[in-house]
Amino acid sequence: MKLTIQNISKNYGNKQALNGVSFEMENGVYGLLGPNGAGKSTLIRILVGVMEANGGEVMVNGKRRKPSDRDYRSKLGYLPQSLDFYPEFSGLDYLRFVAALKGLEGEAAESKIKALTEQVHLTNDLHRKCVNYSGGMKRRLGIAQALLNDPEILILDEPTAGLDPHERIKFRNLVSIFSRNRTVLLSTHIVSDIDSIAKETVMIKDGKVGRMESTQSFVDAIAGKVWLMKMTVDELVEYQNDHIISNVIPTGDKMEVRVVSDTKPSADAAAAAPTLEDAYLYEFNQTKGDAV
Image (cartoon, rainbow, N blue to C red):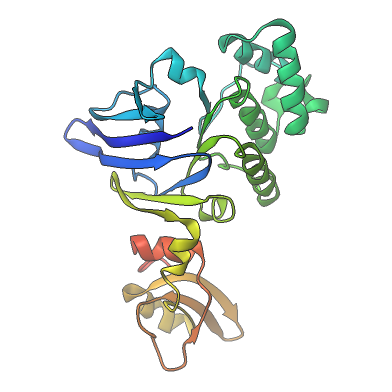
């Protein structure tokens, strides 16, 4: 399955939320990474058909498709940033309800629900009220509903919001498993959501695609640009105004500061292996003045 986003634009009055966004995806996980307000959620809403673009088009396997088309939607699974539940619904009630909306009934629906809830480890909790689920359980229920129609395209909007670190890891592993025969677009501003599972990352800011490359290519591109330094808190307060700082760790009476810089920032700075988070900060140059 090849999904092509071509020159998508969206305006809210005089504000341009998306400006000529274009990229292409095939099977595997693709990260859509950018700061809050970059245009990620607007693009997601257009792709799932709940918002109209002002320009551009979406193509599936080279054929133009409107996101509102029934054929396109039949291929689509969607996990929104937040899920709402009827208060009286159990997990099983909710999945049966969504299955009916997707045209699954009877034994076909029950069989699919059983298989998916086993995969997302919810079998023993299906008769509990959804409103009493933990954040992690709600996200696992969300991915189960998104997969009920066996979609070829799976779109996840900020899927780990509200999850603790353990739940985030389990969710990430599930996404990786389900991506084997699907095109998965995972929109997030949390770098760790995608650094180990995305084969390509799209970086978006101010409604435009900055770069799209393999995740490893982003990391490799800043090799030799990440440094570790020691300094006092007072020195850090001044230093951060003109430098990209990705991490700060107290070490005795000083701070170990991780700096992203084109050149060696000081004679005693030690080179460090880059990460996707370093690459993200370098791309957007957005943490000057934010370390402390």
